[in-house]
Image 1 (cartoon, rainbow, N blue to C red):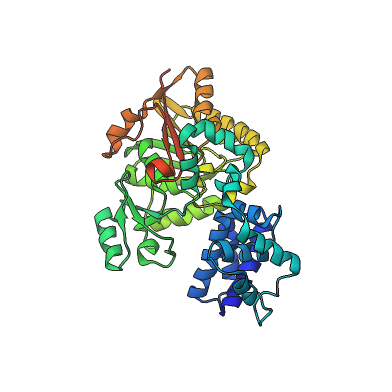
Image 2 (cartoon, one colour):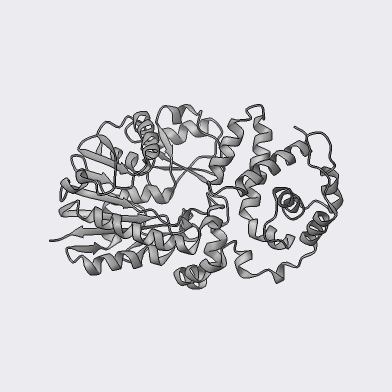
Length: 429
């Protein structure tokens, strides 16, 4: 593809991303699946441009001076601000040549010129930090003086973390194999099963992935699975299993021994989980689709040693990977999520046997979804008590525990992970 044709493809794809509430990664994948004629180097260049624009969407919007820029304006603005091209160079690429973008209209050119001339010192804080204005006070509450540093870290591209499947491989073996391919693989500092690659690469066709030797999973999520502390022979439920990332981890800790049930309300997510479990060689997991007022759940009361509630949440901790998600989140979403979080906590609590543990986790950085939610639950459920996270940590992880708080919060700035919250509650009566 010519440089101009790449730009036109980026414009078309960006317009698709901007025109839907679907996650950008899904839209981008579907776009390229339907256009297999686009070569890998062209695909990479288009991808890089799209993700750079999504990470700097607020700044580019502010620079252009319009509330809802089109894909062609975003691409032009990124060429000026992100790649340092002159206005004349941009106009040359928007020439109307075959397969390229049509020339900039006079008002479009003025807006692109504005991007080049605007003074960054005038940029509002929420624009500089790429965060919706209404969320900024909540994140200031969470992080205080460190809020700017945390939000800046949330705007950076995340490395690619893998979790080694202990049913089939060791971390040393996977590290050696990846390094033999000239991939700069390093062990993660917290998870003893984690491998970190510095850049986003496609692993779908990699032999190690196809053979189930490893899965893609951020180190924070891996750490959560460790803190479940599932043992061989236990009865364990992953109540909001999704596509099964933590279910896979837990199965490894259980060594395929015991009863592991992965539940979700989505048939599609559980179907994807089924494929992953088969690839990983997991034999002790049962998948179950949950329905409203599910009688089966009620019959399971008090029968599990561990119940993991990885609750639906705002996803603010995963913005490094899903930068577009911040603009889909609305204030009313938090109220809807509050009701769901309270419901799944209540549901999970009823499944825990005496002496068993309820693990509540989110990929959120908002206190109202994390510590505030758990403290509210404990206030009305005296049969549970919070276990200090350090108490569980020393039993399952060799790395120093990164907190002295009762609950665990991992963040991109402090811990180089996604944002993640974990609370471990024990049933005492």
